[in-house]
Image 1 (spheres, rainbow, N blue to C red):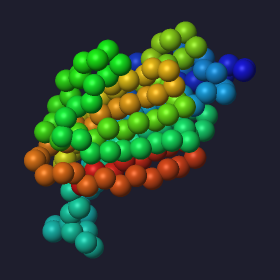
Image 2: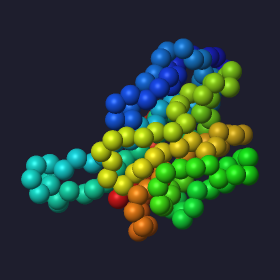
Image 3: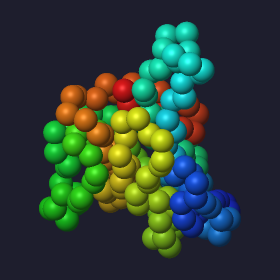
Image 4: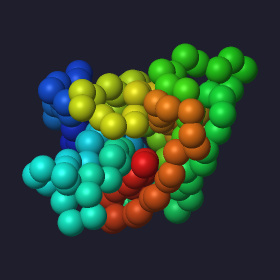
Amino acid sequence: MKAAPVLRFTGVGVAGVALIAATSCLDTGVNTLTGVTMQPDACNGPGGGFLGCSMRDSVTFTFYGSLPAVTTAVNSATVPVGPSGKAPHVDGQRFITVTLRSAQAHDQQGVSTTQGAVYAAGMHRIAETALVEDFEGTVRYVIGVNGTGTPGIMSARGAHTFYVIVS
């Protein structure tokens, strides 16, 4: 497949927004994760918006190429074990595992195309979003959630994005 210039993660800036630079080449035939961002749901004025303050946070996974065919987000009481056989440390009391199949988070040279962990100020429920697997066509992130109750999950798909909304 023909390689195309793409943006590569170089650090995390204000509010967890990834800093990127155009230095990587990706295979156009592979669904490559190029960004993970988090955003709190804003309350509109005193007392919230029309339905009040929703206290929701969202995580957006952005891909170069098309979105992988299989994308899931599942609640868990513990951090899942990674390919090494060990569970990585992820901040939070509850966890949401996001699995992206037929995907990768690295370029043709094996260099990461996205950040390993994302923190953002002002989040209502999300403590951290961390990469736990990028192996043999599977990318998994764990979203660490604050609080003891099981978090609500909604997900949506765009042409190049997968959204996870946590309440």
